[in-house]
Length: 166
Image (cartoon, rainbow, N blue to C red; front, top):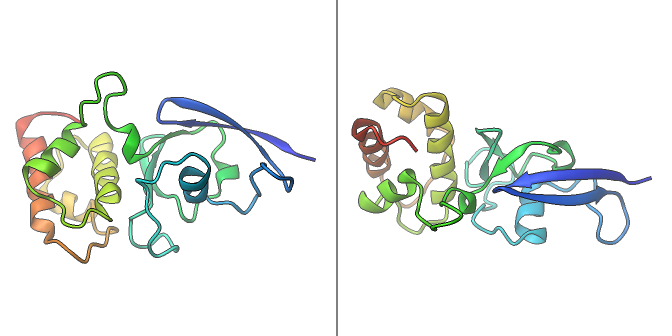
């Protein structure tokens, strides 16, 4: 027997069924697989596959979660936001965090950047005025091989100091 599943992703509602038939979401499918393969939201990346690197981070009810170890079947009724969902849906204007990353060159190859931005968004949702140590702690679960995290910390501090809440 199949089970109905409603997902709220980036302000859109998606209806699925959980089951073993063609077109249904298997109980073992991760949120990352659903986002990338079924919905074409490829900003969320697969890297370690174990929830340790932060590349697959998405917001679930405002908090960062590792989508590579989160089953889609467990996400019913949750508000999910991917990197694609941070920009204003009407104007296309980037989120202040995204703008700050651009202004401070807080990325290099860009592979891990969506996960880092999601981690920052989660931090600022919980604590709009974090200290440098709190920023570092919030980013400790994100792994980047390319850049110095100094630019990332500077970008986040520019938002906090500028009073521009993301």
